[in-house]
Amino acid sequence: MNVPVRDLKNRLSAYLQLVQKGEHLVVTDRGKPVAEVLPVRGRVMSSEERLQQLADRGEVRLARRRRVADFEPVQVRGRPVSQTLLEDREPG
Image (tube, one colour):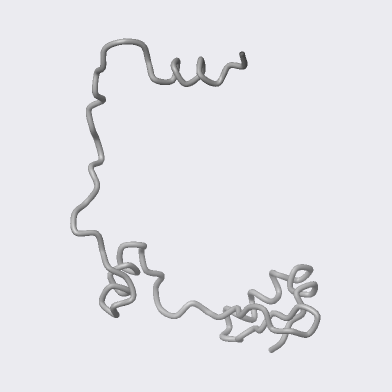
């Protein structure tokens, strides 16, 4: 079913009910198809599951190791770098 974007915007709830019943919507802008609205098939995958699925199909490569969640800040002597940057940016 083709739906102009203006109609979709004005009657979104009604169109979503149609989608929940299995209807496939093609959203048009000035008569040109720009998007599809489809019912969700099965359950929605988590981000990790989706990434794994893409990796299994060879569309992405997963990181070889996880990034470090926590780290200890490095203590340095002298004044903060932010102070030096601010002074360098001052006119004059």
